[in-house]
Image 1 (cartoon, helix red, strand yellow):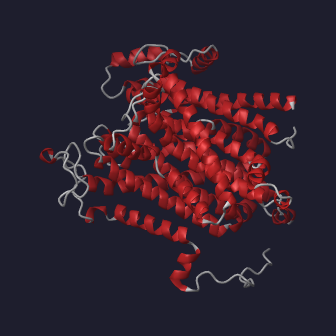
Image 2: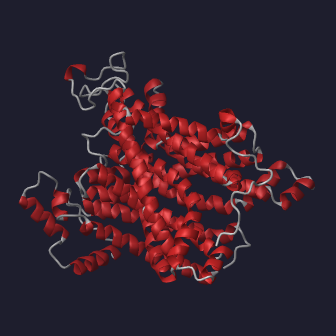
Image 3: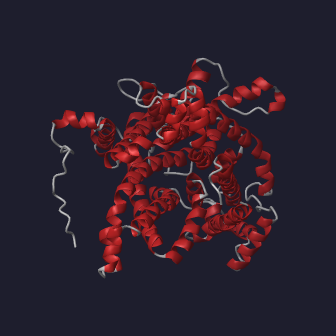
Length: 313
Length: 294
């Protein structure tokens, strides 16, 4: 087990190396002078020269890469072209709302999706099952910002129940904090829940067809005991796997959601960076988001042995 | 080599086409619903100029922010442009991007997956690269690429394709690894069939079902990604009306003129839903074993 853990953790190094090479290489693979592209159409030669110097583009490529990786390993993601501040500092300023929104979304998603999937599999073929499947297809097909605008229309414009947009820190009162968080959380959760409910249902259907489920029912266990104790426990591995994978969906959803709801998080920082062509920020954000994604999926892999003692390495 | 008679009727399986349209609809309701909705969208996109539309770029400052009416079915935006015309023309962008990304990423993914499935050392290198690329959320890959190139439809298609190729190649590789162990492939090797011929005649055709089904899902997700990119200001250039662009422009005015966001949003959702229904239905029809699972 320990050897497996070490191997699995070491396996993330080449993955992150590819991410780093990709993020670094993009700037040089793009046609033309990267400094001119970043500077935009209205740039003067002086602007381009300044960006050239700032990115160190005049040095040999391998020196640039080695230097970039060296600083990266020391937690230095470079300097933002537009604000002249360290990227790490800018990310640090914006990270809180994104973490809060991501965690609240994951919690709500699990609360909605797993019971839905379990009940749909248990009542397979009935109208409950069909309802869950329709929700799953609809939730997966409706882009997050469309859901966001429907929610804004219903809960903010038509009824005035919730604030239209913004983010309030928890220190400024529980209700202001929660009321700003409800709509973005619900909106993001719907798409994720659709995916996870679907996989939960599929995984549960596989398990419910097993002999030991029939045995458990035959010996007179209650439905809840069979469903949760016997079935869900054995269906857990694919469900946890899809939760790990859905983090990618969550990350892209966060970028859009923060734009719609004007939440000053990492997503908003990304969008501002796109509009200003501030490539060091985009590089930093991609590295951080990919690192989080790799880390979560590492934890998911390592959790398999806890979820299913039959899995041994 | 083929000795098995393929046109032999199989007992118990009724012919699909017999029984008329009603039977088909009852048998595959999701395919029919998806196909009909998608055909409507394709019709709108192809015949956009003849469907009562005006120039989607025509400015009309006097008619700014008019609510939907007989003159402007979907209202007008802040520059007085007709939202109905823009939405209908927007179907062209979304469908073109979705289809192109599906075709390109399937082609490249198929190539990479087949090569990786058949050569151990290429596999080791390629799959590490694909693992790395897959750990970057596809939208972020597209954002990074778009931040470095000029806004154009070609670049949008390229940027979304780069993020989708790793997933297709993983899928194909998995299928190929399974096929390689199949007796008919071993038999082909044993009888001295060349590598290219084995790949072309025995491997590739057997990967097509999962790849085609996957292609429909790529098409749907590429349309969403295009809309996201345009919505964030990193997509199709503003002079081309796309559903994402129209919604991005309507975003600031949502509280006074929500219809600008509503119509392209509904069209986008319905189109993506149609493609997903079609993909689900085709997958279930081609592989009944999977239908119970998903």
